[in-house]
Length: 421
Image (cartoon, rainbow, N blue to C red; front, top):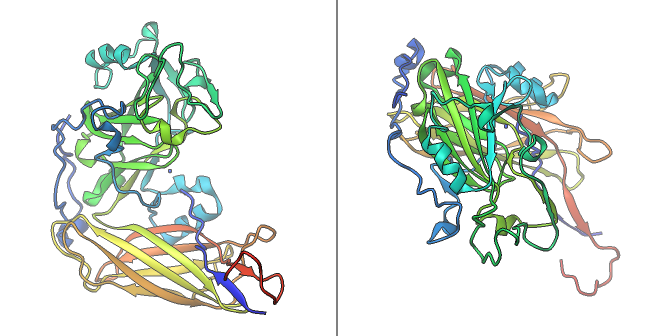
C-alpha cells in the first residue's frame, strides 16, 4: 500500500518565559576575546506617539516598537546538566544562572492601579507613575499584587464574555468602527516593579532581555522612567533588550497596559476578556554572540525505525567585530537517564559579521529513537552548546524533543472521490 506522508516538526519547545548605559566592567575573559557591544541604544530618545493602541491615523499598522524579533523563548544555562534538568522539570529553568523571575513565587510583589481609560491614566503618568521615586499610595487606588494574574481577579475592573460580538461596551462607546479601539471604557493598568540584576547576569558585556509571556491586550514598557518598547498580540511571548537602560543596583520596571487596542479586532473570539499581565515576566542574560533562534524537524524512515534530525541554528553576533571562524555548535540528544542517542554531533560555523545573523545546518542520523505519541509521549532533551574557537562554552540552551511523523494513507487501493494525493 502506497503512503503519502508529511514530516512535521518533532520539536515541542517550552519556555523552560538612571544612566544611559550600565557601568559594570567586562570580565577578563570577555576583554581577552575583544567582545564589546557593536552598538548601544539611544535611551533618551522618545519612542512612543502614545497613539499606537488607538487604530487611528495609521496606528493600525503599528503592532510593535523597539521589540526584539519573534523567536523561540530561549533560556540560556550555565552547563549541560542544568539545561537537561529544565527539560524534565519546567520550574527547574529557574536554576539557570542566566534567568531571573519577576513573577511567581520567586518574583516578589508588584504595585498596580487600574483606571477607566487613557485620559484618566495620563495625569498619573504625568505625575511620575512610570518613574523612580514615585509613591504608589494605596489611598490613590494602588495595590500590592502577585503576578501573573489578570487584574479582574485582583479587585479591578470586570470580566467581559463575548461570543460573536466585540467586547466593546456600547453603553460607554457606541459605534466603534474598525480598526479603532474604544476610548471611554478601555481600562488602563499601571504596573511598577523594582528589581536588581545579579552580577553573574551582567558579566562579560552580556545582554539583558525582558520577557513577557502574555499581556492583554497591548502594553508600553519603561525602565527607570525611559521609554523602551511597545507591543500588541495578547497571547504571544515578546521580549525587549533593556541592557542599556539599566543602572547599577536597583532598577524600576513600569508597564502601561491597555485592555483593548486595534489588535482586539483580530483577537476577538468566544472568550472572556480580563486585562493585564496574565503570564510570567522574567529576565534572561545572553552573550554578545548567541544562539538567536533554531528549528528542528525529525524525519522518520519508511519503517519508522530510524530518523534524521534536521537542525537549523541561527547565530547572532552583537559584538563589535566578526567572529565565528573555528567556532561550532555542539549538539546532544539525551534520554532522561542521560544517554546521548545521537552520539554527539557538531555544526561547524563560518564567520558571522558584526551586527549580523547567520544560519548553520546539519542533518544527523538518530538510530532507533523511542517514538512520541499520545499514548507513549517519549521525550528527549535536545542540548545545543555554542563554543568559541578555543573550545570554550559560550552559551548552552535546551528544549524538549519528540520523534513523530503524521502520514495520510488511502483507505483502499481504489480511487478516492474528491481527494488527490
